[in-house]
Length: 306
Image (cartoon, rainbow, N blue to C red; front, side):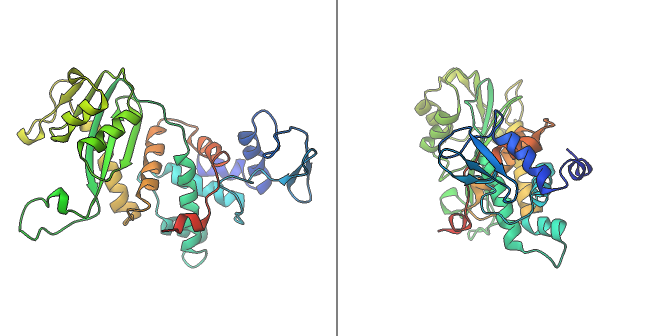
């Protein structure tokens, strides 16, 4: 989907509603409350009315679009811009692109971005299998070591750990973690990795053997590459794939979003992995819309609550 295609196919609210209706109810419109297909369209209100329970609803009711006053073509343009931005797009940039320098509001653009991310996070995730790479990184900007040169110990760092798992030729997962201890790493392995995985490749971080043991991964399925000895590829054993994904994430944080709070970091991680996992698909725009009309609403109060 290109910008000229978007303008040609979805120039009006009516055209946008039509595609959203097909995506939400591919087998025909049904009432969200009583599930009956006996509904009729009220053109003057742009809503459906249920003949059984008299519930009035639109295609946007109970979805990410719920209670939005923005024109749907603006929504569609925002979705396309975010889907096509490899390293993400900031709310400030989205505001300037949609409304210009002196129109619109940052608050509206920020809320718009987060609702799209919430829809992306609703995508179902299957268990990962085959050849996997697993690694951890830390995000949060530069820190000065009070003891002088060298890395700040993990226990003293204010950065946030992010754990990543990448299936070769398959999906990518990012997780905001509390720490990178063996129990935490084992939790992500159990929840995301199939029992019949072929191999999990990691670096020499000392927590990984214990994590594999706690997750029930046999020792012969855990392969290690020793970066401390300057080794980054040993035959098929490498973590270069997951490290490249981390590099893309950090370029997004530094170059596009500039600053990401720990509270909202999981949403940005979901956006990055959703887009990465669909990087070769021509229907990423339509797939995003499909998740937006099937995901639960996200209110501004929920988004900003402590």
